[in-house]
Length: 137
Image (cartoon, rainbow, N blue to C red):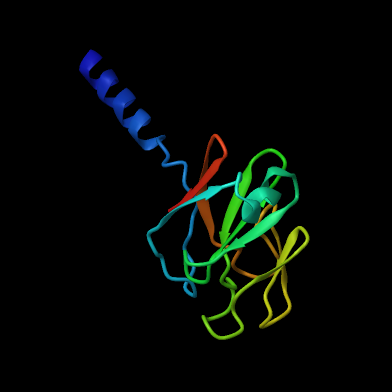
């Protein structure tokens, strides 16, 4: 009886574990592996020290990264329009606390990544180490 209870308890623990990840399933944006360190001590990224500021970081993900200071942490999203196939117009631009897709003029919240369309912004993991923001997937 004790063995059965231990087995049941072990199964319960294993099935309740999470990878603390974000669901990144999007048919328009491919999955690229990367790790980027953004040093907020550098002038190009110093705006990230303040709430509600965002920066564009080229060279990672499908179309670059948008990193946003929420005031209580950081969000990092792919700069590819999540509801458009990759094309000349499918790189998001930053407008205050939103990102705009030039293809369809839809806005996405940089706090949540959501809009009124089917797919939200593709979100990546963020880790803060001193003055460095590490973005990875």
